Image 1: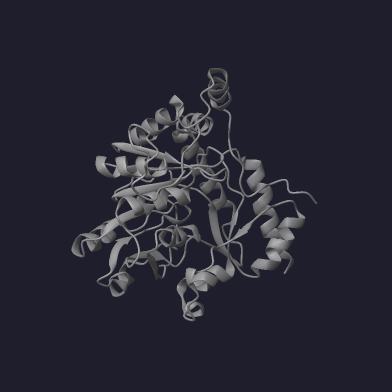
Image 2 (image 1 turned 120 degrees about the vertical axis):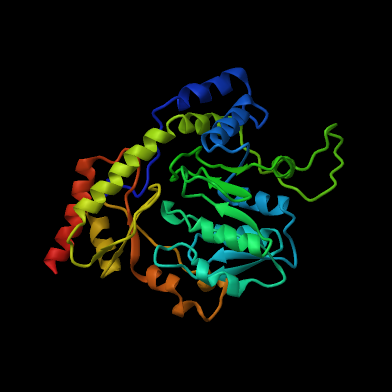
Length: 352
């Protein structure tokens, strides 16, 4: 059976087409067009942050933030065990070393386990707001203050969660709450950090464009066409978040009382609706046959081949990775769609 309910689908019913058409009509399709700046200003303003620096992906946003903070070889950055591998890769891309901290029962980094991983080489901590749940940022910011650490928030899955760190980094991939297809953005109140990130994303050109480059930099720029889509998405963000709150509520109701299903803690914003399921892999096969796509949870970073540590089977993150999955979660998911999904889950466990 073909997939009728994908795990994600973008909603593109605002001004996306009109704005992209304008970039093509005007010929401003590169990063020099006005839509990138308009998007940066709109998203920064939405979050009540002074500066936005758009770029090519969430991974490049994290890399830019770390580089702008001066993090490099010999440094360490605290990273959650439970996250997408791009969080750790961004640290590795700078030459620094990611140091992993296990998750709490809400899947976010456990603040009580951070201090034991801090060394003289630790320069920053990277909390990740997993699936839209805000980390315990008060505790994390207090630790950062006590140890003079910088805070880079990985907000790839958390558009709408207010940023408080030195830099907050967002993904705009097609499955995110808002999208530009591919893309990312960094938010900061520090003008010098913003200038440095903008400089690094654009190959560190000098003002006179002399082709003399004083540092290793990147081509991490966002195109005007992507900026046009992203701007249209920001204009709809409040509506998207409200619709997703309803999706979360309907799943909570529809899954209530199903034996074998453990509902996870509420999310501050809904990116993906995650749960824990007995006989997870059997359930996934059953749902796929019924046209419902799902995804499993992240694997611990210490289980990744590039960061392998034999401690990984004993982590809280491993326990969740064994039975966790998330359901179709997108802005245009209807009540009838969700009734179908939850009905099939109930049928699977009833049959057992």
